[in-house]
Length: 160
Image (cartoon, rainbow, N blue to C red):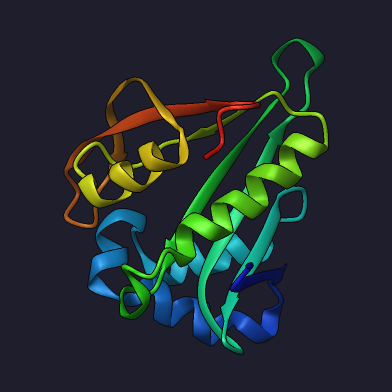
């Protein structure tokens, strides 16, 4: 049974998305909430969705595509409001979007959490993602310091 719905993100979602990305548990991984909200709403070529649960927007998920024939694959980014952690909603949203991307012909999906984001990495591994490598000094934190990222991927047929 599917509990979450993915619907295209719209400008009307701006304040809700900002609230989600402003939660300290999310902002520590995503960065500046205003900048990230603007970025999500400006995405034209990416697929950006609100994650809805029981009629409420509880998160945001985006899929992007590398379309060059020899390197064709997709990637996913996810943020769920901490008030909804532990319910499996993020996992369900990833399963839905990953399946859509596989159905569109992609054979591999990547995700790149901060290497210190143990909670996210655990969830992604439960879904079948595998650790590919460490991305050193991958992203700059709100405090100006650089942090490592973890490149993970999932091949078609490995989604759990």
